Length: 313
Image (cartoon, rainbow, N blue to C red; front, side, top):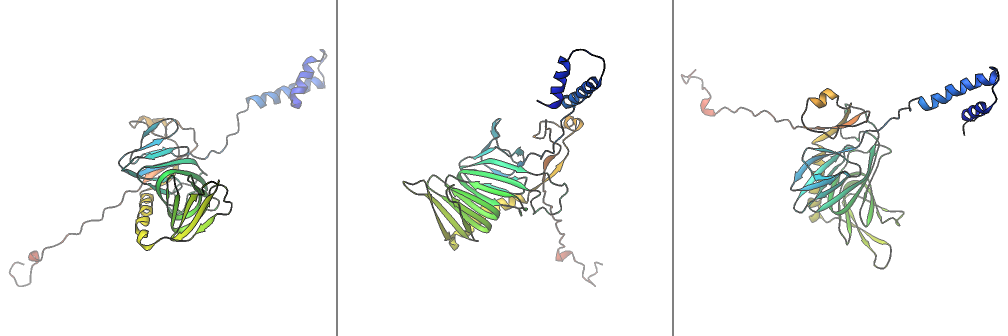
């Protein structure tokens, strides 16, 4: 019990007597006690909610945001943390997270965002290839194949991808991860990646460019076998294409921050937005990048060129 509350109870039980120092203490105690209950809470700096943007979509895919399951839509933005993306058979999509990481999801692939938090970042960034702020991302690839293309992660950021067999610590830059019930294959194109076979592998293996790790469970043991090998030349083009789709998605959008929409702005547009009903001090907004179409040069036919002395001058 606080000192002021104890003093208040003591004074209330004391017999009535002329105003004294105890009465003055009572006034002070009441004033401070009222301040404790009536003073507004100190506002805490709140980081904006992390987002993901759908840059490519072929076929059908769904997203489970925790509140509902809905069809993934091209060009839409969703809250990323705790979401699950289901890519249907004969379908694919590419998404971009608000830390600048692009992910291409192949057919029949399930990706869960276990955690994605990031610190507030400054608006109007100049270098869009650098991660906008420190972030922590944990993705779970349950089944299927995903290509990853990251921005340059800033100091203090971390990015992990989990599969049923492996824990992959990504520090950049391009890689492809494929998993099924038998094994997980991690193919690094370029960058810095450490692969651990399950949670019991404390050290992990660091991959070099064009190496891959194959992780398989060991029969009869709660352990995994990790094999490191070079990626054959004949397989490199197909692997690089998967990561290239993730990199292309990154080039179609960047993220900026801004104030939430005012009532007038919300009333002036039709439909709802993921930015509605937010109590964030600032929000992350996707800014699609529209490629510029170069001017078509005008060609003059040789027959239309006037020759000197031809009489057509």
